[in-house]
Image (cartoon, rainbow, N blue to C red; front, side):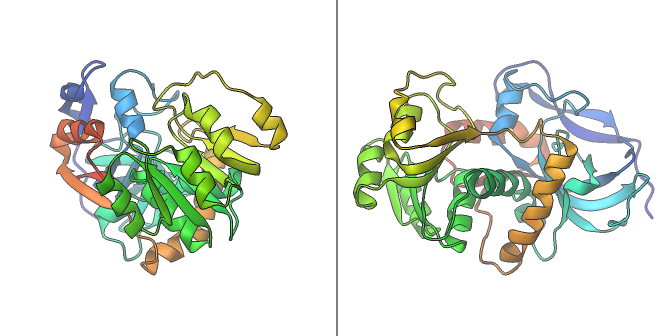
Length: 331
């Protein structure tokens, strides 16, 4: 067993601000507590919540690391007490509540999944998106085979995952994206209809594509005026699941549609959920999604990787919205 170093390189946030506030610094290598593992990070996914945290708009929950990064892949190098399933040397990926932008990261054993045959860069892009999509589209949204899913931001990490999973489970998929390149990328991943929201009205296009019936499930990360428009685009008994507000968290909405169509509008965040909640989602992902990843039927869409020390450049790319799929940091 190799001796662990005392110090590691992490990416700290100097002060709330632009990408340039992300700076490499030295921190002690953490020790795992009960039911925790220490992972030597090979790769870490970059996600929108990391950007929000960097701007000072999304503080880590109590007890979580102040280092950004919500998903990692790597090798277990130390075990806390009470660990039965894992051993040192295991190749794993994990959803973490922070600390991913580092050479070593603590993960809860119950939020950890086997990497199996996935390359580490791909594995690092799996936990945050698959946990989010599985819980929101399938558990909260109740998407079933034969139904229509409308995904806003289809070319994002979440969107590219939602397209592939929904298709594997027999749904029809409509997406919105902001350029023809992004629309084409989504079609290649399996989207049945890709709507360029800059040139088309997604409400009219969704209704036209569904014989005026509307979408059964809508996954929305935009908010703002999309909330009312989602109500228009939804089918009777439709389920709208809110996972972010890249537009605004406030909107003026005609709620009559909610009643007349018997809509369900729900939402969730992942980071602040209890250990038990995340563990339950992890088991569902392991049962339902990992076999598809192992078989190559679902594949993380990796747009670009950056060395850990270039986290600022990774954030600048994410904020440009030029990417299609995931951005990953590597050690």
